[in-house]
Image (tube, rainbow, N blue to C red; front, side, top):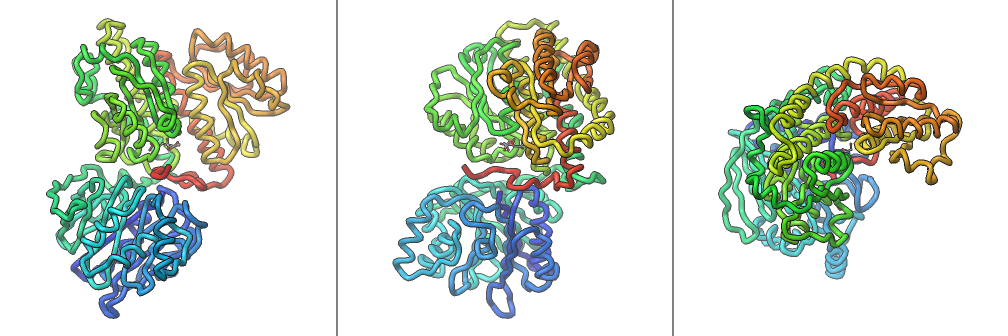
Amino acid sequence: MCGIVGYTGSGAKQAAPILLDSLSKLEYRGYDSAGMAVYDDETKSIQFQKTVGRLKGLYDRTHGGADLKGTCGIGHTRWATHGEPTEVNAHPHLNSKQTIAVVHNGIIENYLRWRKRLQDKGYIFKSDTDTEVIVQMLDYYYDGDPLKTITTVMQRLEGSYALGILFSDHAGEIYAARKDSPLIVGKADDAAFIASDVPAILSYTRNVYYMENEEVARLTPGAVEFFNIDEEPVQKEAVTVSWDIHAAEKGGYEYFMLKEIHEEPKAVSDTLNPRIRDGHVVIDELNMTDEEIRGIHKLFIVACGSAYHAGVTGKYVMEGLARIPVEVDIASEFRYRDPIIEEGDYVIIISQSGETADSLAALREAKKRGARTLGIINVVGSSIAREADNVMYTWAGPEIAVATTKAYQTQLIAMYLLSIRFAKARGKIDDAQEKALIDDLKALPEQIRMQLASKADIQKFANRYLAAEHVFFIGRGIDYAISLEGSLKLKEISYVHSEAYPAGELKHGTISLIEDGRLVVAVLTQPNLIKKEISNIVEVKSRGAFVMAVTTVGNTEVEKTADYVVYVPKTNPYFVNSLAVVPLQLFGYYVAIGRGLDVDKPRNLAKSVTVE
Ligand code: F6R
């Protein structure tokens, strides 16, 4: 999704090179064009430049930013929603006098109405974007007071926005505003920054303010002020970001995705260890007594994409261990399906970014219906983290690659921990069983490391399937949940079509697609289901499929049927996803690498999906 940056400084440092550097830290969000606007003190005007494609184009066109002179500016990477990725549609957008410049992330829902109104008043629109209406509205209402004008426009906008705004008659000032799209403000001694995400400004400052909905910020070199939509000052505390910029750099790996897969053992330990105390699972942030946990009638787990897949696993584990009925929903479905939520229902939203528009809307829907809510979130201070009744953070650290790996792992861990905690409170497991489960959880980081040690074998196997056109993943129970994630990892980065099926369901139609040489990845780790799934492997084999199986050490009978077997270490069957997903992540990664693709920035995708 679009990325926003802004910089204003008092020294000799030029804004444009800093904007380019900050935008490069947001590339992971996905984009198709980029632009910058800088206030030029000599000509007393706003200068701008835009390009289609990668940031490198903007860099070259401005000679690394040197051509845009000035110490105050805003920048943008655009992920097209309204209108093609063209230079005209790229941000910043300016009014016709070029006295106001705007960068925007989000979607303005009532833009057509305003476009028409302003066109009737003689305004000429150049782009197809919803954003251009914002700058024209600012122009229409501008009376020399930026704060008043911005709040006037905010009151008329419907939809979501994070905005960076320059006014040429307010040199050295950047204005920022937000509603339902992420925006942070950074402050240094002689400079101030805005950005869609922390890594963009981490090389310059660690002092960060999280903007709330319907707030406006005024930035000047070394100072930031905040206001509500009624223009009243708002006092805010800066948060000191503790993680290092190196955590958001590649550290010698060719791609962030491979680096992040290698960080899984640490991410798992960091999420797990603080919640194990004296041999028990303790989740303080739930803020729930045993009695309250016993009072839960039903759980909803709501999320999108991989986070949804973690939720599917969570359902099996929670129902198996705690015996609470669980419904898992895709957030974009949940929010419109008029869900039946009753007293005693508990809604869990899983999200790495904490900004996914559908997940945020689902959270609000659940709250509106009276449910108690929990966010399982990776990005501290994100919208869902702030709006959920309680937050359980996953401590994966910054995840840059668009395809999630380590954050997904930590979402699984959060689900395991919750399941154990709920099972214990409901008397479904005793101390000894809790201890055995915890021992298995504690072994996971080392077992994931063992999986990573055999990555060369997976690469060799992946190289045989670079030309594959269709791949099927099958599994039963938790193995089906693992298949969903394995299939998504492959298709999103390698562009190989793949589908995941419950193994027993394939014969109800899809098996007609199995033909000679078709790759089928069968996940079979659940002891009570292995025999059943071996029968499914036989079914596809007899139609010509080549079968790669992922199973647990000791299940040697699988070798008699499958063509290629990957073994994962023994663990409690409820936790096996954490191990079995690793070779599947690596398989997707190496197929994409072998096909020469940009693994970290797959086409059409964005890291944080802040539009519906
Ligand atoms: C796939 C992937 C996406 C996200 C989904 C939800 O690799 O990363 O499917 O899982 O867009 O994002 P979050 O977790 O930020 O809500």
